[in-house]
Length: 204
Image 1 (cartoon, rainbow, N blue to C red):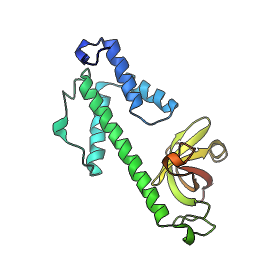
Image 2 (tube, rainbow, N blue to C red):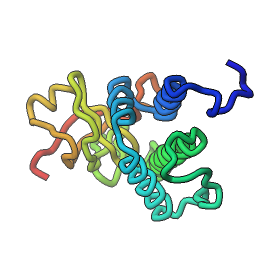
Image 3 (spheres, rainbow, N blue to C red):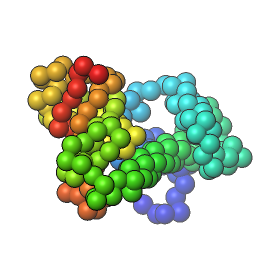
Image 4 (cartoon, one colour):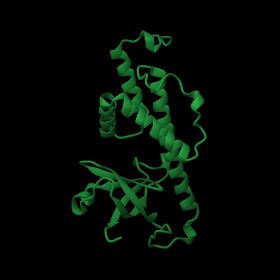
């Protein structure tokens, strides 16, 4: 396909294919989540897409992010056959996710900068990292799958082994006070998530 081809030259089937691919590539999520988001995207109405767009802009403005500029909007908000407008929505969502990941990573760096090795104890707490890189923190369950669950904390995403789900009945959106083990920054770790849950305190 020529790179000079515009969305006006594409059939509706081709355009939908490109939309779906761009949507999936723009999100750093699991395969299962990609499928779910893909189905949601295909089945959602124009009103639902507009609501997502408005919510995204609201979050960006609320967080004081600097890249929001309504003058850059292209096309009509009601024209969802406009490929440029569609990709703009994806860019907004991707920027929001990237900024969230950056803030989490920066908070995690600050946590370890404030807890140098020589000041650590053997036991972890909600204010100090242990010598085994353990830490206690609140997290909200973001996904419950067949093999594991995940939670979101101020310090990044947490991997929750499936036995916690079975033993404690962990549910989506549940707030948990967890003992976490740090798995490393970025390319230094072999796991996808920076934290692994080692204990959940259900009495907190």
